[in-house]
Image 1 (cartoon, helix red, strand yellow):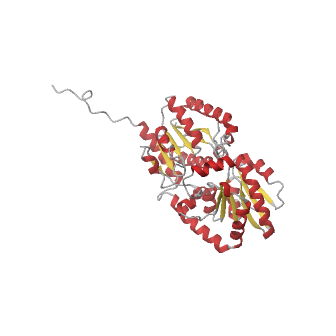
Image 2: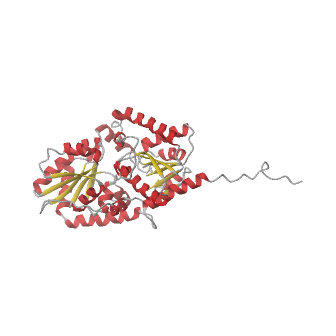
Image 3: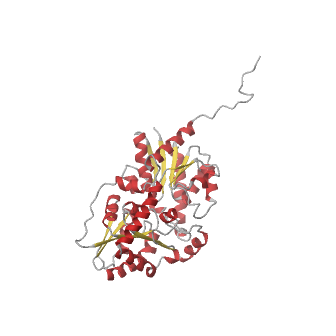
Length: 395
């Protein structure tokens, strides 16, 4: 029986890892999983070492209050891996945490293949991460076709497996999303991390109040993860516009399908909305100091993947110092009032999304085959050296 240790430190990684688990089980029904994961993995029988909410944090100053907990979890994971001695370690996203775990494992001399899923965004910032990743990983699986060269130049084998956003939606359990008759449905997604909700909810609520004045028949759906459901409900409790928090992948995608438009935190959700045919804009910010640092360090023009692939702003984005209700509201209102603009956005965005899948199989199948192939190659005996010490003597 193969033991595969998985670390998925945030909700988007949890979804990716759950798809990978299913694809691996299709190839080996006896495979055993352990490690750290979220609610979607738990739905497949995975028992997480601890709640991934302890790791779901981004930014610079935002990490400081949680640093003692993160360091304790890091030590816990390293010790648990030492006990389990897995056949292969698969880490998913969350590179800041993962990189340090891998470094500790290397220093302890643990010997098994280490495969990372979702490349660190070295093309956006922190280019030095590519060299560090090459020293700590056996193989890297990328979601984007242009990422492998950044790492291969340092000798790290890479495989472009594609982004499974459309795959996740296609295989989600169908669900209905009841809404009042005649309502115009707006989706609001303030993020899956506590600090995201606290930063973005006030901005999104102000935008919502201004949109309500122009479209009094608005009905708002707020998809969330179970761990943040109460936090989101509290953040939007004072909103007068009729609204409902929905939880679970099926309900999430049903909400996307019912929505005429969406306002979302920047991230993977933009690809999910695109796959569902839902026009949207994205926004994101940290505290003022982190905003300033990231603005200085970032090397890309856009934050949104669709925009990066297109080379232009297909999805309106309002990030860092531009994440303001007075800037977001007129763009949101213009899109809500113009069906032609919404249709043009989705057509252009879906063209970009189509470029993120491998040509012959699903992203999850490609990822599962890469993990198993890496393990098989790791187990192969090294080729016998041809030298005087192992050649027969001619007498």
